[in-house]
Image (cartoon, rainbow, N blue to C red; front, side, top):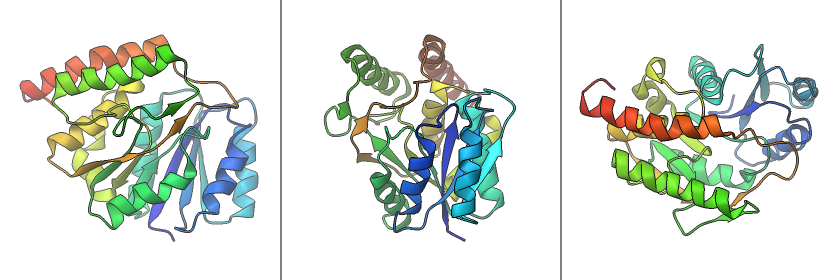
Length: 241
């Protein structure tokens, strides 16, 4: 068994998931993959099952009854990975906005270089986002600046969703206390790791907007992040985090 698993949540990713799985399987570090599908009506889960036949023992699938939120998908995946003894766990999108070539860099930052959490960062070396509307680039960039201001975390990309964790980091965070399900989930995970004084590194990546499929971002998800950050900071100040 590999010591690293890549968790990929999916909803209607039939156009991306077959190629994504083949691409990750080809990488030299021998990544396993866990897909968590939220009952996609387009046949995403069936495509994953076909890939499982091509790569027995390396691709795994958990199917949920509906759209239950990104955060809950990752928490389920984290628990699954810890129960099976993986030493490293990576979060990744299915739509190729995260380049699979960068998996090795995130993994080695934790395994070889001692990071407790490595982040594929769009903003640590300028603004490295391709094919996003300018309004969304500005919203994302200033959202991270807002998070830095409120939380005190010295991270350039606190909302990033391309992240590698040591298993010990996930255990230290106490997954049962994670509160947020959407966009704010990524911020909360980083804030809890930061509060534990663990080593976080940002690895520069180029983020490319999806070509196929439909984005899951919406206003309510962003709103959760705006108000969630204040809530996180207040709980930290009052000792309730």
